[in-house]
Image (tube, rainbow, N blue to C red):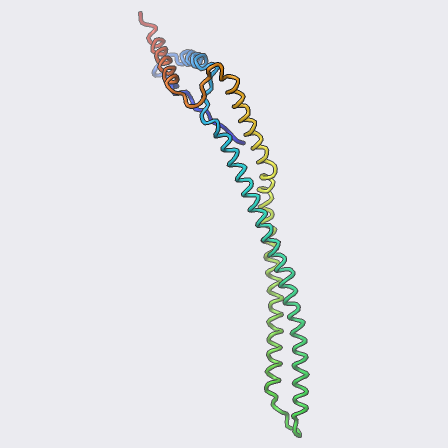
Length: 232
């Protein structure tokens, strides 16, 4: 809800029971005088401030909506990367690791058969190192698959929390902000109509000047007369 505050008349003062034995009648008389003296007038300050506020709210809505859309795009990219790109990549590496281990074992077996002399087994150092590297690559790929699974769960949980917090803001931007902007526009139209209708009657808009000070002086003078009315 958007509110516009109007300034209180400068001539208003507080009246306590210690200053006047009957404050209520005097306050009522003062209220009637202020109402009569200000009849047909409204203290309007910065009418264009309503339009400026509507423009600022509209800018905020556009920027917030753009930020949410940008976040949604980044989230979709992150989900695509963790659930598909990394998942497919490391599962492929696991399959490839098993294939490399099989190839390394075959090469080691062939080398041992070809180089065997009697009952003496050949060293086949290179082939054994290749088999060890293949096993290490498979172990790393399997660890990455498990890491991707845990990361995917954590990311899904974070995204669900974000979307839960995003929903109220998104709903407010889509429903409440347009209502507020419409209310501000109606308020601006009403103020413009008011000025147009009373322009020929001499209604003063803006900050009240010397006329306002004169009104205050007249009210103070009237109060003095009432307070001293009991004396001859």
